[in-house]
Amino acid sequence: MKKISNQDEFQQLLEEDIFLLLKHSLTCPISGAAFDEYSQFVNEHPAVTTAYLAVQEAKPLSEYVRDTTGIKHESPQAILFKNSKAVWNTSHGRITVENLEKALKEYT
Image 1 (cartoon, rainbow, N blue to C red):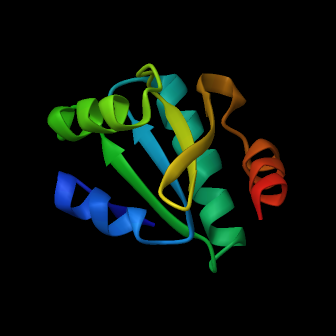
Image 2: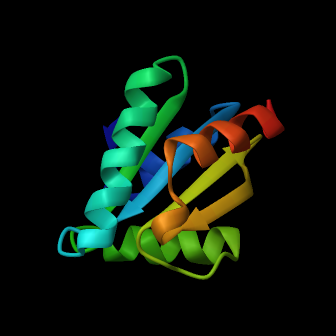
């Protein structure tokens, strides 16, 4: 799982066939729980390209992702990209290993 903080790093990810991005708040306990679920997913699926951004440290990037995808910003928020386009997203308590696995299966 790669931490990204700028548009160039995000653009590099868009070159991947498929990847997951987590928008994570460093101060929210709900986001902390989602980060734990995301981390577990990452550990169980090492072949999947994954990244996250810390909203407080990368607000311009978070806004860029919002503007690029047209998906309203939420934190925490997981977004699945395929062929450079956001194809699925969820937020808050719905960020679970099970839901991430279901999304990945649906789009691969």
